[in-house]
Length: 340
Image (cartoon, rainbow, N blue to C red; front, top):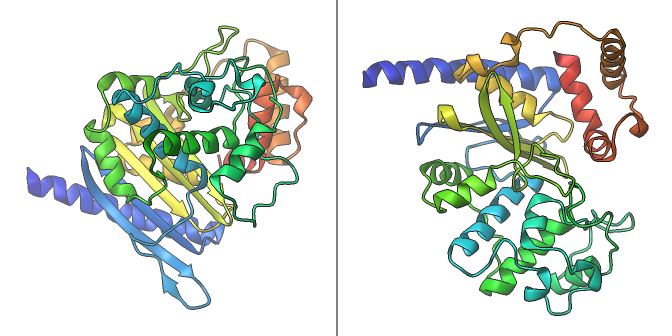
């Protein structure tokens, strides 16, 4: 039985190699790293292509990639571990830990930051990303920003909210949390369920509900989806020429992590391609088409898809949260639709 499993893993690894070679050629991706965890063990960790084209430095499983928003998953875990240890509470107001918190933070809690429902906006338009700043300088800058919407009203993706969570972790523990951890080891530990209490895992991956009662397909920063009846929990990020994604398939005990050094690449689409090799029944290709019952809606959907592939969208087509999310990732969405 063990030999048979190993043969299957070897065959799948060969299929992954072939798939990645095709993607790298088609998308002109210089370098690529992948880690696959199944049934609590690392079954594949490989590097492809080049980390540095000029000096022909090849990518290895230990090559360092920028992960950007993928780091939010680490932030969520650190906060929930502090909650399990009794050092924080989800419903702690920010003023409990930041005595000089501005008045407009009064309703804001740790939970709101984790859910991206705090109303704290993104980076201001004039923010210079080339300048190094201390936590104190970042905190003062965040304090000065007006809320983009009333706390809890809706979900609005907030990098500054997660910067504030990082500062909160430092404030509570006295330790800077941003030490670089090995992604594969992290995923194995995450799957083993040893990092948090069971209730905290459930909180992290449960859909949030905004003040209007609307259920959103997001937990604590993680996106929650369902394909063919199977749950998918994932997080992606992109920054300074890099892009990354981690997709977890809990029922199948499968996790796929990808890191690419081309910002224009779509890591979620690549992750799905690798997932199809290990778990083809989760592919959306097998879904049955929905019968057309509303001609006007069918016409709108066709028009929307056409506009999306041409990268032409208007915000007034959508309610505010959906429009914000779509327009923030319109280029990636357009490439995904064009490949279907």
